[in-house]
Amino acid sequence: MNLFNTSQIETLEALRQDSSPEQQLWLSGYFYGLSQASSTVTSAITATNQSVNLPSVTILVATQTGNAQQVAEQLKATLEAESITVTLSNVSDIKVKALTKISHLILVSSTYGEGEPPDTAAAFHKSLFAAKAPQLADLNYAVFGLGDSSYDQFCQTAIEFDNRFAELGANRLLPRVEADVEFQPLVDEWVISVRDSLLKEAGASTTAQAPVASKNNQVWSENNPYSAEVLAITPLTDEASNKTVFHLELDLDGSGIEYQAGDIAVIGTQNDAELVASVIRQAGLSASETVTLNGEEFSLEQALTHKRQLRCITTKQLDAYAEKVGQPSLVANTPLDKTALNQSDVLDIFNLASPAGVLTAQDLVDWLLPLRSRQYSIASSQALVEDELHLCIGQVVYELNGRTRYGTCSNALAHLQEGDQVSLSIKPNPNFKLPEKTDAPIIMVGPGTGIAPFRAFMQDREANQINGKSWLFFGEQHFSSDFLYQVEWQKWVKAGTLEKISLAFSRDQAEKVYVQHRLSQAATEIFTWLESGAYFYVCGDQAKMAKDVHATLLKIVAEQGQMDEEAAEDYLQNLIQQKRYQRDVY
Image (cartoon, rainbow, N blue to C red):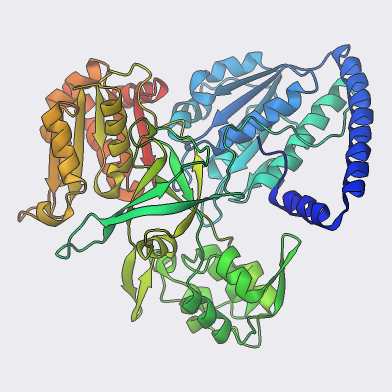
């Protein structure tokens, strides 16, 4: 558990360095006295609250990668500290009709893709919006939404849940909160608001303390990352390939970091110095100008290098920019569609209308989105590699408007050398895990760098000496240049760790062949595996591949199981609820 945030740690360290041993001793006694006084008051309030009729609260989580789960656990810990009885469940574990028996519901929901509910929430969402959904006049509720404002459908699932509860007659306890990628400050405020609202309703008192932190076994976090040393960086594609994909090994020795196969590595990044300089120059500003972000002061150069995203412009940003520079016609006349905007950077927008003499340094950083850490599926299992962590990275490179563009993080990682440092933390991915029954059959669909977590799965099975009942579907452009980790997959097939492998190299024949085509060709056997309890995993491109694979799987189930489309959809939803259909797509 992280007791202090980064700012508090810096304050404490500065105080330690500037104080004498006698002063430090006095401070120790002073803070101890405060804690004892606070503890006495808290104990008295807690005892009083236990005699009050406090409500029982159900917290429901709709999550894809675990952020909503973390928020829900923090809320649960805070409410339980006030003697409030809390039940925390995933929305996949509850039926909509059960809401009629709940008095107080708190829903924490992420939004997935382009405004879609997380996989585990799809069935609940569908039932809630059905014509036969029950009236919820006795339900008191609040909704917290997690999203990414770079997407047009920001927090869409939370908005839909909130509005639907109200339509069904439920009573809104608090206004809906919509949190962006830097969500923790909003979480802390909201948790206190929920707690105080529930206590006030019951006529109970509050300790007025900060929210209780949820349990966290990781010492390192995105705000306090571990500096991992690069052990090796190895190309996985050769010079004949149209892509640059590489294998990265990081040293975790002494860090205390633990991860599981299926988890995500969060990598800190920064913008390219040349791009930062060009943005400042074209805006007619000075690198040393002071700007303020979240109450902290930075030079403009520091803010643009470490704190603000300079690539992947959104339509909302273009709208805001047009307003800032006083050119409302800019949006209607822009040659950049949504896809081109997403591939553009700040300089492309400046070329549409110059900001020089119009935008101040503060205007510029306020307009830009926060620079996010990048997330990569971990390509190793600690059961085999121990104090190492491996990644499979595809370098993003493309041409646009006469300039070569590079992915912010992938380009920086591609130029690392042995001994360099990488900022790293772990994000648990509870919805992408090997079966609890270790020898259950698994089907893995991972074209391109989507193969990463399945390498981790196989390492885990190798370490635990589990053979067979595993099937990989892998696809890329060319067998000779793009077969990622080819030697390892062949080794696992020979050893019996991997039972079957189906390959789709799209450019090695006149007609393009993708992983979904290989799935269709194996339809009978795929359905037999599913009927015998197999788990089905998909990792990789969300926009097209994952949708094509889902459509193919739906068709396989319908045809092989002799079902109509609705029954086949129910079959897949049942797999999701059983955690037998899991996706890590992006």
